[in-house]
Length: 334
Length: 193
Image 1 (cartoon, rainbow over the protein chains, first blue to last red):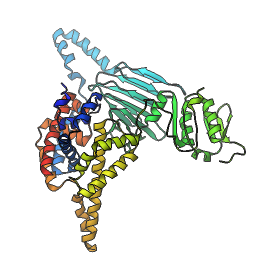
Image 2 (image 1 turned 90 degrees about the vertical axis):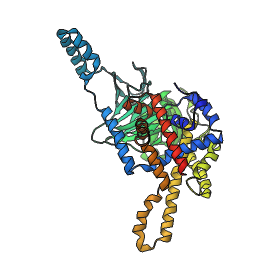
Image 3 (image 1 turned 60 degrees about the horizontal axis):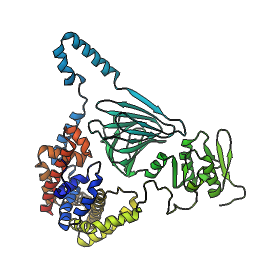
Image 4 (image 1 turned 30 degrees about the vertical axis):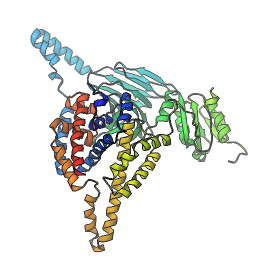
C-alpha cells in the first residue's frame, strides 16, 4: 500500500522524489508539505546525506560494501538455465516417460525457435504507428526499420535504420530493450526516442527514466541513467556521451508530422528535411549552409518549405528529377 | 498546403514560437524563478552548512543563473528541487576547491609545491572528516537489503524497478527501503554538521 501523503516523513518524500515515474497526484501534497520550515530542515538533512555520500566513493569501506552489491546484480543477470523452470519439470514426472519425451520435444522446439520476431519498416516520407502485444506503442519515423521480439522475460527491439519513439507499457518483470548499433537503451515503462545519426545514435527521454549502455560484452562500462528531459548520444562502438537536453521539440514535431527548426543552420535543417523526401533539396553553394532559419513545416509540404526559403532567405529553387537546388536570387545581396 | 504554419526569418528565435503542442506552459525563466522563490530560503540554509555564510548567499545566486542557462527542466517540483540542490552542491564543491588552492599558494613555499598539491585531496571534499566517518558507519550499519538498495541506487544508478528486479522485491518495497536508508543517513548527517 502506498502511504497517504499526510503520513509521509522527509525520508519518504525524498525516496519518492527519486522514483523513475512520478505520480502527478503527489505534486499538490508535496508543495503543501515542503512549505513548513521544520519539514524543510528535515528534508535538507536528506539532501545533505545524499550529496555528501557521493564523496565516499572510493573509500575502502564503501568499496567492500559495493562489491557485495555488485555481486548480487551480476548473479541475477546471469541467464538462468531454461531446464530449471519448475513449470516444465512437475508434469513430466507425473505423466510418465512418453509424455515426458513429448514435453521435452515441445520444449526444445520452443527453446530453439525463440520468440517470434516481427519486422516493421517505413518508406521515405512515411510514418507508422504500431501497437505491440504488450500494450506498448512504437511510432516509426521516415525511412526506418525495427524488429520486435516479445518473450516472457524480455521485450527486445532492434532499430536497424532511422528513428522511432517508444511509449513503453509498465512491466518491471519484463524490461524493454532497444538495441541500435552497439548500444542498448533499457526501460520498464516510459517514453523515449532513439535515432540513428551519422556517427552513432541519439537517445532522448520524454517520460520516466531509461538506462543506456553498450550491448557488447567487450566494454564493461556501467549503463548511464537518463531521466525525462535529458538525452545522450553514443558512438558506433557504444561509447556514451555526457547528459544533454532531450530533443523534445523535434520529437514532438515529427510525431505530429511537423519539422521544427529553431534557429539552426540551413545545412543542418536541410539534412533533417531531406530525411523525409526522395528528391532532396541541396544548396548551390555550401557557404549558404551557415545561414540560420526558424520555422515549423508540415512534412511533405515541399511547396510551403520552398516558398519560405524564397521569401525569408531569398533563395530561388530549381527543381530537377532527382533533386531541387537552392541558389541565391539574382541581384540580391543579404 | 499550410502556409499559416510556415514562417522563416534569418534572425534569432521568435519569442512567440509557434510550436505549442502541450498547451501554454510558463517559459523556462518564469519556471526557474518560481522554483527559486519556493526553495531559496531552504537552499541558503543548506549551503550554510557547507560553506561560510557570505559564500552561501553568493552560491545561491550562482545556482539560479546556472539553472537559467541549463535549458529544459523536468517540471515536477521535487525533482526540480533535487536538481537545484545538486547544482548548488557542485558549485559549493568547486568553490571549496578554489579556496583550498588559494590557501595552498598563499602559505606553501614554492619548493614545497608538489607536497602542497598532494594535500589538496581532502580539501576537494565538502564533508569534513567527522561527517565522512559518521556517514560511512551509518551506511555500513544499515540492514543488508536496505544497504544494497541504497548502494545500487546511489552508486550504480539503478532505478527502483531495476533494483526490484535484481533483488526480487516489489517496487514499493524498494522505495520503502530507500526511505529507511535516507532516514538513518540523514540522522547521521544532522549529528555531524
